[in-house]
Amino acid sequence: MKTIFKSFKFRIYPNKDQEILMAKHFGACRFVFNHYLNKRKETYLEDKKSLNYYDNANDLTQFKKDENFNWLKEINSQSLQSSLRNLDTAYGKFFRKQTKFPRFKSKYDKQSFKIPQFVKLENNELILPKFKSGIKINLHREINGEILFATISKSTTDKYYVSITCEVNHKPFDKTGSEVGIDTGIKDLAILSDGTTYENIKTLKKNLKKVKYNQRQLSKKVKGSSSRNKQKQKLAIVHEKITNVRKDYLHKVSTEIVKNHDIISVEDLAVKNIMKNHKLAQAMSDVSLGTFYSMLEYKCEWNDKQFVKIDRFFPSSKMCSNCGWINQDLTLNIREWTCSSCGEKHDRDFNASKNILKQGLKIILSGSGIESDIKQKQVEALSLDESMKPETH
Ligand SMILES: [Zn+2]
Image 1: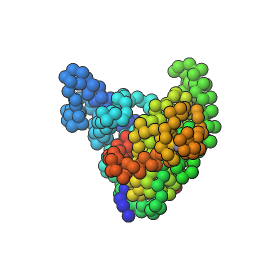
Image 2: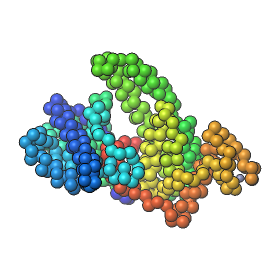
Image 3: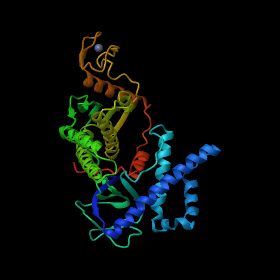
């Protein structure tokens, strides 16, 4: 048994008063985030000084004493602090060149706030600090383990959710003695070096048509009109559906791969970014890949398996996995090729996945792998409300 963090997501049904207080929390957390993002930017421009979390937190304490900001007193102060933490994390990611510069939060985005402590479940109700009464919750599955913290969110389709993160005991999957390299593509989500392929799901294609249709309809509506808002809702519902279907599928595939193999080697995502284009299907598959990799990574961590990412400049597609010869003429549209050196026939993706495995094993053997900061990432992911769906597979 080992202790892991796991999140469980449930729909909640706040009453009118609770809805109002939630709206205040969303707004206040967004306000704090934006206010201090602005402050950090200005301080840097004026004094070339970088503010950190503690500077901001101290400032916030003073700030709350200002009468004009009395309304902040209604808000769980820990939620406000966690908003500052999010900002700090976003800065950290930017400086580590993992993301773009943090942007201001908008009330039109998905809304969320975190409750770092004192979350309870009693009589089918969610108990939160600052909320006088319990909130109705649909506990469709049992949660086990000790509750650490929770995040309340409101989707763009106006549904409320809570994601409860617990410390749970987990029995890792059995060892299989198998190792695998994974290449990713547009048509297929994953091409494994053992010959297994996982297609991108078809429901996605069907829904993609719906997205395009609804987007066209939206573009015809007058800005600010009620029919435009209705259309926006329709589009949000389709997006929500796609996200759910896709997440379920990614969970299923990632769990299966981690169950079947002890070592899993993938290519650094940046490789794929080089080939990025702006087509909708592509954009969506890019998003999926990031989620897919992070699921593989934390599930490996949960189950004592090894996850390795190979260098973005490794020529996984161009190299013959049989003899190591490099095919300089291999362009993106060539799906099959024959090695001029050893005569081996290659399927482009399958060959790449074999190389990804070989390279991954080399990295592990040489001990030169980049130390995975999975714990850090998990904490960041959770604090940024990319709450994981409950494990159902
Ligand atoms: Zn060859």
